[in-house]
Length: 332
Image (tube, rainbow, N blue to C red; front, side, top):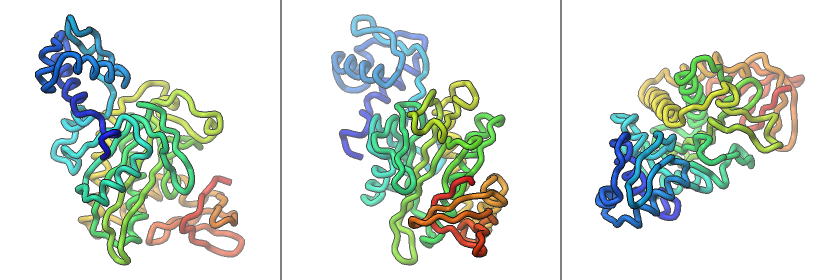
């Protein structure tokens, strides 16, 4: 990642030291030793942490103390929760970035290993599918992109996107089983009729073989509101449940669910059928739903009739059953 985007590693080291001594005031001198620097540099980094929303008491003369454990998606906080997983020690954090998918695709092109995870507190150019943008309020959501290098044909990548939807749904339910997310083909997670998460899968492939896939996931977690043009379309987990969620807990649950789906897909011959079956079972959109399909400038109305064996949506229209390859699906 570019040096101007990557979060200063020393922030994490200071935070870890303060977290290890939660009831104690840690002197600026001790923190300076930890990062091989001086007390004025510690003060500057503490100010940066406060800018990230971390509640640190104290000042250079007396030392510093954490008032509460921050809900930041820093490697120091996430790594202990992901020991032994595909993502162990592969967490990269940005304070602010254009789009985590853009960063992850560039890193993958430069040889970033499978399991590299790119997280941002804020995106200035978050991308959705097609030309859509993604509202990325600072430290309110999870903006996450993961690099995979599967031995799959390019046509199988749609199934990976569906599996990512299953992983998002499973992670939300793991943290709060009273929430019932719905899956909208191919890559939206809804609560009621409003979008709570989206998935953007991008790949680099040869004709028969995928070089790498980046699975980007955006989840609206603690957003209290949305821009006016999105209020009818978007919601957040906090708005649905009335309480704040731990982004750290949800991110760890998400990555573990994603790993489970991915390992099954790459290791078991029947995993694809399992993904398609479970997606169909957990989605109110796949079968019997009146929809309008917008594809290549034309629209067609119909009723959904399940997924084909590749994972594409089937819609019964007045002209017979059509397969939706890439269009936008709207409720009718």
